[in-house]
Length: 156
Length: 236
Image (cartoon, rainbow over all chains, first blue to last red; front, side):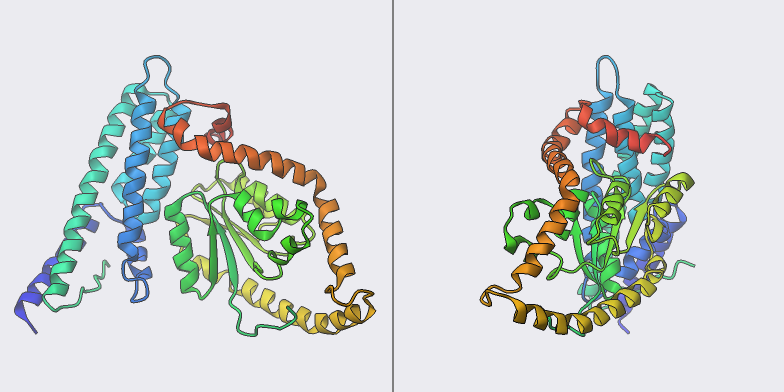
């Protein structure tokens, strides 16, 4: 077997494992991968694309809702958090989902400063995840270009 | 129309306002060998079933484009959706004599026992917590078999009846006019109160969907959006 491909594959495996170990991803992400096959080879990428589109939209909505001089509609902020929590749960974005759970409580408590801080954290977190997953896709591409197959990584 | 398509796939109508979740459920169902149609609202689901504006147009052709040709074997819907919730959709389906036998499954990201029992009491077959997994869909296999067998039996009975109706018809060039006429009348009368409701609600939904993004983006809280937010923030 080509040493270069083997090295890339090992790099890929370690990278994926680290994403799970560091809590970026959970088993729902594994489920997503299992739904991808030769018939739907870009399924994971397409779903993630929808997720990050949601992040941009919802974070934007929340920023505007929190940027009110006067009364803030925490109900509205909460509704957006609910949607983001749903999306993050659907793709296995564990850290983003965790933040949303906190965020929801802050909305219910109408904690303005808490919400603003949490929103900033959400913003950082989804962008970080996006960059990490981009690196993952790049590794996959490199493996394929080097003539190898992207390994299935067993998380357990 | 009377021809039984022996290999016809189990057709699921999936309803969810989240495009991400629609994509997911579609893929899950396809992997279970189902034919899938996805819509983003309860209104569109009803339209697809033929419980929408098509019927009131008094156009006999409207009926022929609905249930008979796009038969739905199961509806799977998200609970929390703007305008018409999954629960609302469940109720309408179960109260319609034409579609009450279609199994309805509710999905929700929240584990609220009162919500779950309310849905089951209203006639939902199953309640799935999101994210939905392949194992959840396995619970639907019995429904798939039951519906398939039932329709195969119905097709066996229907064939001779169609022949009789055609023979008794006064104007043979029109296909079963009495049958079709009766069908239209029945559906219209049973749906009358709801039709008005649907009309109003559909108009509201149009405005809502047009304004939805706008109002969310502007951070404005309109009355229309209130029910949705209440749905999310209150427990049941």
